[in-house]
Image (cartoon, rainbow, N blue to C red; front, side, top):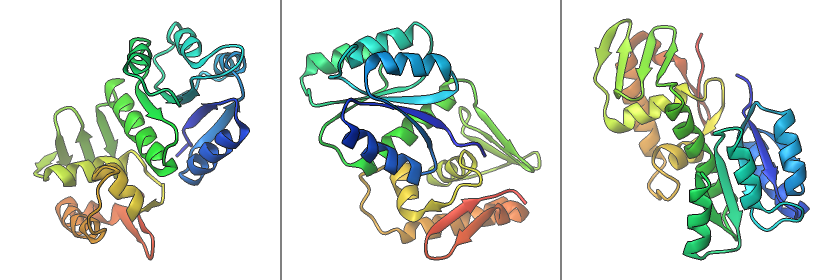
Length: 225
C-alpha cells in the first residue's frame, strides 16, 4: 500500500521536524515547505499530495493566501496550524475551504488523529464509498458489509473498526492508534476493549477473520492473504 503524501508548510524548522517525525512514524510520506510561495510551487509539482498542514503566519504568502491559491486548483484537505485563536480567524479559514483548525501549542498525537480523521472523511466524500477486498465489501455511506455476497450485521463500532482496518491495509496499527481513530482521540478507556471488538469482528467475518493479524505487544494489521 503506497504511503499517503502530506505537505507540511511552516517557516519554523523545529515545528516542521516535529510534525514530520510524528507523521513518518505513522506511515505517511512528508514533503516540507518553509514559506507560502514554496508551498504553492511544491503543490503544483506534486498533485498526488493527499493533505496539506499549513501554518498561518509565514513570509512571502501567509497560510490564508496559500489556502486560497490551492482552492483554485484542488479540493485537497487542508489543516491550518495557528497561534491565532479568535473566532474571526477560524471563520476566515473555514470560508476558504479549510477542513480543520488546530491552535498552537498542540499535541502531535492529536494532530495525527485529526489528519487521519480528515483523510477518512475526504476519501468518503470523494466517492470511495465502497471498499472491497477478497470476499469482503464495505459500503461506507450505506453502513453495510457484505461477506461473499451476504450481508453481515455489525455493531457501529465493529463497522468503524473494520472500515479503519480496510482503509489501512498492510499498516501495523497500535492499540493506541486504533483507540485514537475509532474511539476518538479523547477516549481514555481500557485498550482491551479493542481486543474484545476484534474477537467479535473476526467471528463475524468467518473465514476472512484471518485477515486481521495480531501483532503481539503492539496491536493489529489487516492483511489479505
